[in-house]
Image (cartoon, rainbow, N blue to C red; front, side):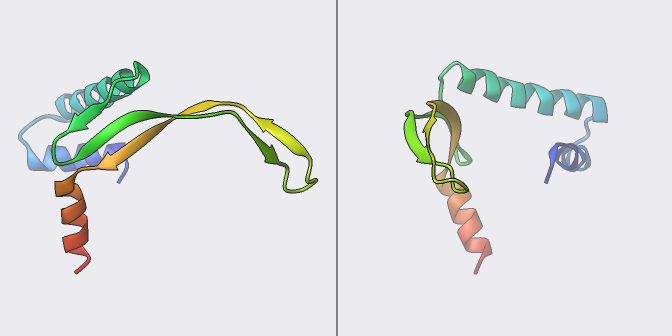
Length: 94
């Protein structure tokens, strides 16, 4: 599901207009991105937690040449699904 499919789903499930739903989705996603970018955890109870995960600089190898390369430190976003979400996914597999 992409952003426009999510928007269509919310329009169908609510009495809100397309503009209202689009603004709500945009605002929600921007809020999550801004909080995570400020090194804050975003926890949506039952759904999951978004947080920054730091990776240290390390040595790597170019697979084509075998040459040693330096891989710089980076930040990534980590998502840990909540208990309700995990149970929902696992129950739907049965």
